[in-house]
Amino acid sequence: MLNKKVEDICNRQIEREGYSSNLYLAMASWAETNGFGGVAGWLYAQADEERIHMLKFIKYVNERGGKAVIPALKKPAEELKGVEELFKEVLKHEEFITASINEIVALSLEEKDFNTHNFLQWFVTEQVEEEASVRTILDKVRLLGKSNLYLFDRDIMALRTPASGEKATT
Ligand SMILES: [Fe+2]
Ligand SMILES: [Fe+2]
Image (spheres, protein in one colour):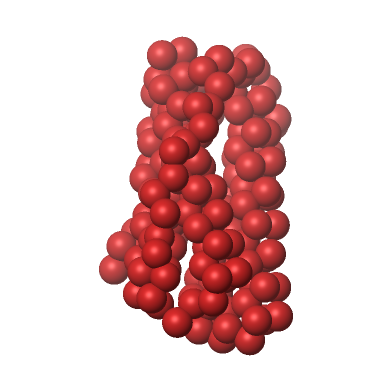
């Protein structure tokens, strides 16, 4: 059975993954209404993945005899300054999530909860991929510059690693 500290920090992560999904949905909606259909597609897919991450935590907590708490979610910003700024924010958010996952890893070791430690390894790997893929996107945006955003928007879906999210559902 999960101890209270581990249960609480996993519930904190349920909220954070849920917020990630909401954040990317809000960004997708902004992109969609500002002429960036490709960027919107990338973000909608990303939002789906984050929901799967939340579900993984919900199911894990319940499976281990804890009680998953379904959180109220903060409202993300509606207005964004531009595509580069958007992806800078995505990267910042993913770095925050990586740090958050690492805190759970540290606690699981401190509490000698090796099942949770094992469960978290998927997320540790996932965060490396998430950060790397957003850094690649940011490099491309900077390389192309503001005047070539049309090309960037057209090609962004090709930068998606079909990996993690899909695997998560199985
Ligand atoms: Fe996530
Ligand atoms: Fe993520």
